Image (cartoon, rainbow over all chains, first blue to last red; front, side, top):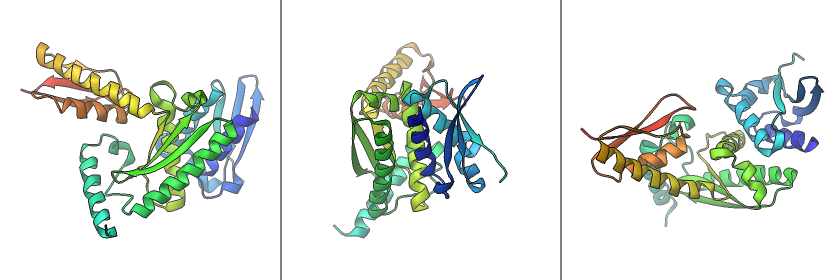
Length: 79
Length: 190
């Protein structure tokens, strides 16, 4: 499972201005497993994309490589 | 051949392609991105690194081949069966991975990329199938006189169908509906 997190982290790092600030963590709750994507606040727009397009692409690729049933959340945190 | 001559030819191909290319809907290809061969080679290198690292992390077997064709960088991955997961049903995963790869390229070059990604020769195979479907549907529209509506397709798929329909006299095609339900409709020319 950390394989999925590593793959997602790599995909996100390549498309942001601050790759060192990218962290992906796998969180398990009663509702299932979620890959939480943390990025620099300035990169939120890039990871989400116009109309959520980039976030959707990330989810589609993760579903393809075996993460079906795993949610991908881009976390909006105020730091 | 001189560099400027090559660049000029590329521009013409780009323009022709843009005019007919359904995919420009979502690449927003205002003007052109890759103007020089050098930039396209650089695009391929960046994309190759991005995808190779992904394959490594996933432990998928795959060879990455880089090319420049008709004014755009082409990245092809061929290898083991695992790659089918990166294509997905009707190529949906492939389209998403292409989108992310374009963004990764743009992140480094600062220029919007029109790079094309193919995996396990899916586009090549799909292109042949879709061209057959387009021609057969055109014949059907001609003989029945009725509009033939195909199932929803991606921009890439619709473009291939439109091109195939255009080779049959007396019919024309257009796209209708909103993504992701957008589909090709073929009908006899009035």
